[in-house]
Image (cartoon, rainbow, N blue to C red; front, side, top):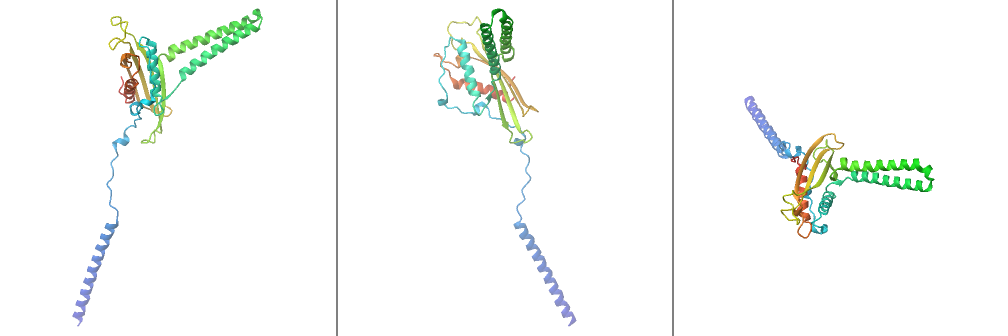
Length: 272
């Protein structure tokens, strides 16, 4: 009797242990099914660490309706250059590109108007004052006028030079918050390269035409110029006949594509 009771207790204990094991295994399975799948750790993207490239001029689409017809005299080099200069300013100063800085123009205007006002005031003073009494004042006004005119001439020659466009653009960096605001500055100078005497001809043609030369400087830095991000410089010349037909009508798309390619070269730091 005692042996039979012991066997029954042993069987009941074994069954209880089996039920506990099955319950534990079922609980682990349910937990595994409910838990979200583990995602592998992502490797840092190389694109995120690469420097952010601002949009270049070639990325801006301009419809033909936005352009006015430009027509010049092919025999006038000054008209050819002025037309190219104006087209370059219109192209690069579009809202999505650079904001033109008129510092050189403002300085020349201030000096010029100061000279005009000085001359007018000196003349008015000499007219309303006795000749002998007005001599010191007239001489002072005359010397001041000469100084202002000389300063304007020297500034135009040595500081402004051949510069036709100075632009600036500020963009926010979305990839690297430490950079915050990126500032771009571009300076472009232009001049006309005359023909050599051996190629001179009274009639301009595709093989006999002066050239339009551009020199471009580009700098990209953080706001305030704390660190330099990119820098480029390039120079290139192309004959005016590549931009104007026989009637003097300007092919603005061809000119803008040429300018846009040069600007994007310096933006990538590939310029010479």
